[in-house]
Image (tube, rainbow, N blue to C red; front, side, top):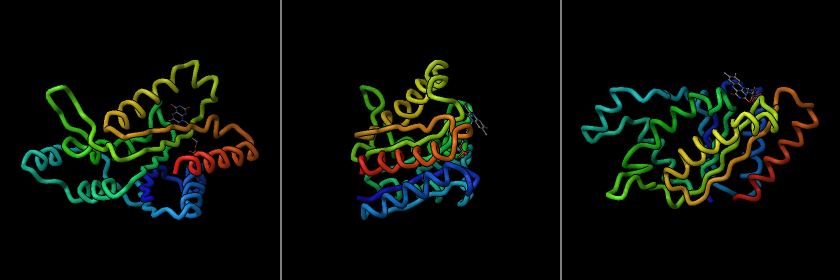
Length: 193
Ligand SMILES: Cc1cc2nc3c(=O)[nH]c(=O)nc-3n(C[C@H](O)[C@H](O)[C@H](O)COP(=O)(O)O)c2cc1C
């Protein structure tokens, strides 16, 4: 099993960093081959620019995009980890998707409409929110996340399976609750590798 973990949080002491550690630990125990993309640490450029489009139209790929596409192609399973910022993932992770999950690589257009190309892969999305579960449901935030992230990215790109888990009210719960959440993340990973 080859696993690409795409992690997006600027603070190495964050709860998201603890999630990354738990995920890596479970993947290690399962004997998976793992590549981790720590987007802030690698100073990923998240801006899909006019220069990128110019290179696409002349049949070239910027080297950073080509490298990431090679690693996505290598993986059987992609695991994305991010906090929820303004009802979506970080702009950093969004910019990874903008630039790496490009036309011709992650999807294509056919006579019958768009078709995802990453059909041999599975995806897990792990996020954290300030909102508790009741608020996240009542405001429509959870539905919006499922639509824009699971449907809009993973289903659109043709992933054969995509599962999503959010940890709620992270800044407001006790350390015991946070430990329990990390156990749930471990179980989520164990059950899906
Ligand atoms: C810029 C910014 C935007 C945020 N937007 C949301 C939001 O839309 N919904 C929400 O529930 N929490 C929101 N939060 C709270 C974070 O999701 C929460 O603090 C984070 O998931 C906790 O994990 P961490 O300690 O690893 O950062 C936001 C936080 C920041 C800094």
